[in-house]
Length: 321
Image (cartoon, rainbow, N blue to C red; front, side):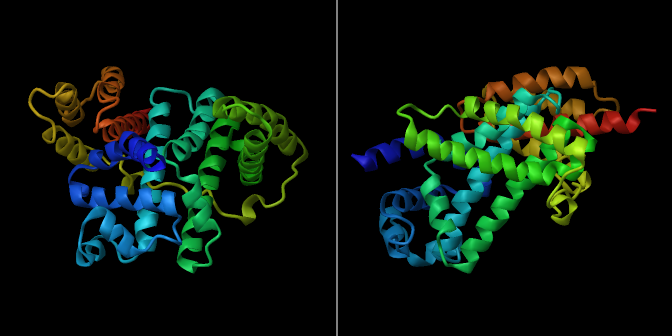
């Protein structure tokens, strides 16, 4: 039965993520989101009513509206969580790696496609894309532009600062190629989509495209579309106080016998010290992230590992002569 398959996949892929949010989301709200996502996939977003969600999750209307202002917000919450999972996994891949590594870049792009497939999100994004609702269309536009901005920044990481004037144009081409190659692969081939193979092929073509654009100074949008606003690290989760607060909260959420708690406590003590040992921290961070693989804490642990790595990396650069 389709419902059984959906329940199994959601339990395996999404519930663990919701649980990893800890006190940010209570069990009942998790249950509502899981129920809503099952219904949106099975019946379609437009055909699912708020009452359907109430019946499925066995909550009152007042409880639902305490969590979400509308059915739209419920759907957007599901999609935002998927974005957070994508960001966390992409960040995890960068720990200890060269930002110009094309293999890492390919894996990062592929992660987004894999999460969409794992969490059965494609029908939900299509429902938003084809909706006439201005709120939903505005949401999907922001989502699309955020992905373009990420791609453009990563292209600059890979090809150097001289690629910046051409990064937006190239990001648009990469996204377009990915979309159309997937469509042909899915409809024309009788085999499972190999996302990493596909992305690697597209990036090999991108090598020639972007180098030729740089050589000929050829661009269409270039700086006319502003996607590359600098990130203020003091306002991000790379801030030392924010990292320590989140790490302490995470450590406190673990039982005394919980595997990995000692790593968390070591990281807390080392980061608070006057002269943190960077190389030792990098070694521990890898073990810290791996310890929580396939547990409800996986996403939070790996996001923290990435945040600590980049905080220490920025601190090292600031101290350099």
